[in-house]
Image 1 (cartoon, one colour):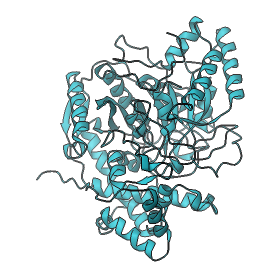
Image 2 (tube, rainbow, N blue to C red):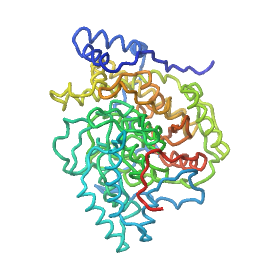
Image 3 (cartoon, rainbow, N blue to C red):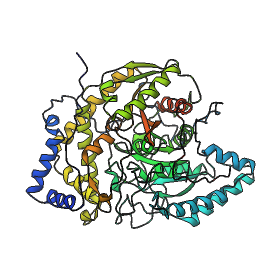
Image 4 (tube, one colour):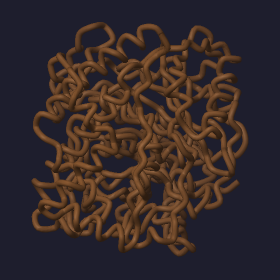
Length: 567
């Protein structure tokens, strides 16, 4: 029998402007709201999920044992193992346009061709210029120039003394407005949260800063992370550097825009439903979502406890590897991180892919815009020419997994909002209000069933990844959507497009498996990304694959780009 593929298309009308505002008011009302929410769930195929028999016990958080079978003990009480060193670069570099990388900054500082102070000044000036554009880029929402310059000057002194802290010393970095950065408010894309600046950095930020990284500021995001376009009515919607009339993707929208526009080679993102990988793919850069618990959640906003992952959005696979290696590892402040195996970067510069098995579930892989499929299939063929083997696999119950993810992400974010939004519910954008109203229609039985379905999905992927090393899909089902005139300033509801964008992202969040998005090519001038889902704790395999693809996919200079290094 052919494999069963149960991800169904959605046929719901797009709404914007006054009709959308009316719909949201009705959705939030008593009586009529319940009817509208119920009808929407029917259109989403949700009754199938409620009728599904699931006997497995619930998995509350997708924590995997280490590769050896049992979780390993932490390095010691509060002792952090040093990050793995980045292997020397191979002779074969990226094809086409090449944005400056972290290593380019370090080399320029080492040779005395640039200083972190001069780079920081250029970065701040470029950010200001980018927001004077028509339309403004709106990658950043919070800057602290005095702190940036103080950190850059300290880094300059270290480089001049020939005592840098490491390869990130003096490199400009950015952080999504979901993680704490000392001195900055954490607003989660709103205007009313984060009224006081954070007192300390999130663990991931602190580790980057301890390595000498210069944090430029906080980046824009889709409000409270409950959307995948990047739309934000409060701070302005970030624009795609490759096509400013198009979305960046979300919710780590500003981080991807900042990297793609050259404002920094590395930025932090958070991912509960594709929020690192989607904007990375739509903006033509690399985004790594590590294994659940690989990167500490300490100092991050509580949004989707069992789904949130934190990782790098980067100009290159090597930048992603560097950012990941520095931030990953056990943290006593986050119990989910304790017991992980040490991070590794083995094979990053291996040009051949002999022995690597690439799994493809064709009904899923091909469920995207035909142009997206064509670009991604072409890259799979070129990876096979480098020695990888392509293996057809079967992944049942993807539709049920998608519904389980929807219940978990909406319920958990909804619960978080109930805890800290207070009387500000109507201060959210219309799309957020609609999603939160829909979340209130889920029951505790739905939530428990979703966690039981997670158990089943984790076992399914465990079996599949025993046969292959990675599962490949397109990163998104469509390229970056255009920002239509009627979207601004109030937003839109376009569930068909939203679900197409995240068609391939949800599975890795539900199961906690690592996944990476990296460039596969272009369609009509817009970047196309491909995704690889890997075994737990095997981020090095995903990074190796993304690095091997770089010479095969010529990159193009974005329409909006700033070069902070001369030459």
